[in-house]
Amino acid sequence: MDDFAKKLGKNIKMMRVYKDQSQAELSFKSGLDQSYLSRVENGTVNVTVVKLCQIAKALECKVDALIPEIDV
Image (cartoon, rainbow, N blue to C red; front, side, top):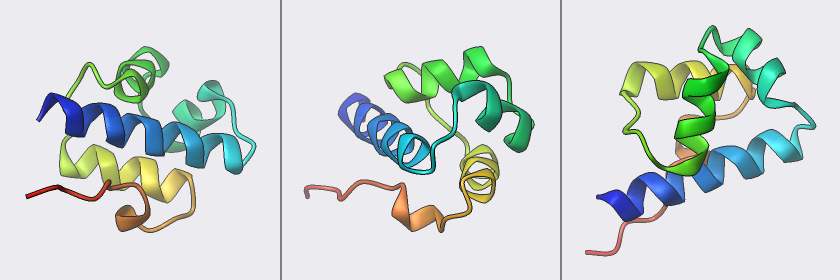
């Protein structure tokens, strides 16, 4: 699962950069702490579904655009 968190964080960061937002802007829009978002993007913390939804809403994208494919 550690690999999943890293891929998810990478996807969130890529979407944030694509939307031309800084971490501070995403923090403000999502209502999440900037240091928490940094840990999410680095893949060092597991994100709850609620927080993932907050991030997606702030990035104006669907949640599934952030979730990486899972190798089974």
